[in-house]
Image (cartoon, rainbow, N blue to C red; front, top):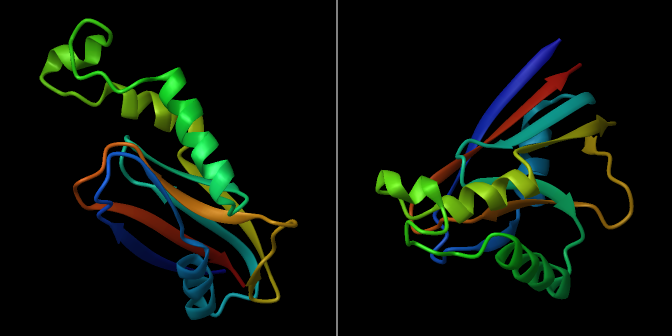
Length: 140
């Protein structure tokens, strides 16, 4: 079995955003030379996410509104105990928990093997600094 590892770095200029990273993941799969296997894609920061869904702007707006409703940004220490540690990003930790840490996608004949409309996204919930995403391809 072979493996190939790459790290993607993102520095999102806003607090929350969603970025389609399917092309970067597909490129890593291509570079790996692996024809049959799996690719793991995971956010290496606890205030960011990797998930699979449709690349549709209205849906991304709905995700952001829904997440903000579930865990609104509030830097005060009254709403979130985590902010009592000197941080102001408790909401970002909660948003990440809902959207997930990683995805695993099958690699078939050297390509990502998706269902209809599926794409891989990086979700940022506490932007303004560089963060990494691990792409690990394993197989034959």
